[in-house]
Each structure stands twice: as structure tokens, then as C-alpha cells.
Image 1: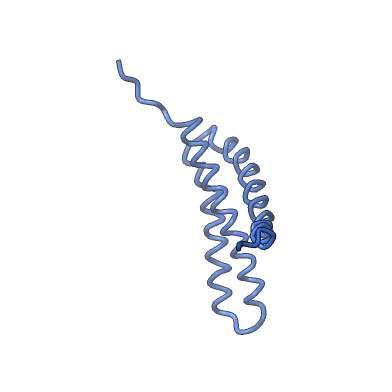
Image 2: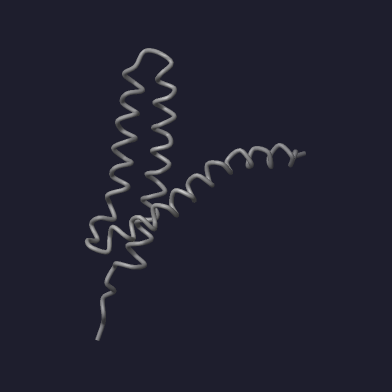
Length: 105
């Protein structure tokens, strides 16, 4: 028999991650929208900066020999979550606001 209390507790562990991604996506949405008013290619600025942030801290985590690697991995994980959420918000912005639909006459 399945113990539903264990399943519900394991799902509750992921709520902080989901809240972080939603909050970061919302913030990124408005910043990207303001940046992209001048140039649509500016939608890629925030995701690329966060990807660079993730890569730098990921490499630093593998290069260090002490417990500092844990901190670098945590920062890289936060950057990765930010990269994913800002990429999603940029894709949503591109397809809803900035993509010109082809007109068939």
C-alpha cells in the first residue's frame, strides 16, 4: 500500500525551487521586456549573462580543493535556475510580443 504522506512530503521539498524559478521568471520578464523595446536581440542578454555566471562558478567548483567547492556549486545551481527561468520568460516574450506573424493574403 502506498503511503501518501511520504509522497506529499517529497513533493513539498520542491516548492522552494518552483517559487524561486517563478519569481525569477517574473522579474526577468519585465526587465527583458524593457530591454527588448529597442532591440529584440536584447532578449538574450539576461539568459546569456546567467549562463556565463553558471559556467564560471561551475568551473571554479571543480578547480578548488576545499569546502569552497560547495559554495561554488550552490551559486552555480542558483545561476542555472535563473538561466532556465529567464530563458523561458524570454521565449514567452518573443512569441507573444515581438514575433511578427506572417500575413497570408
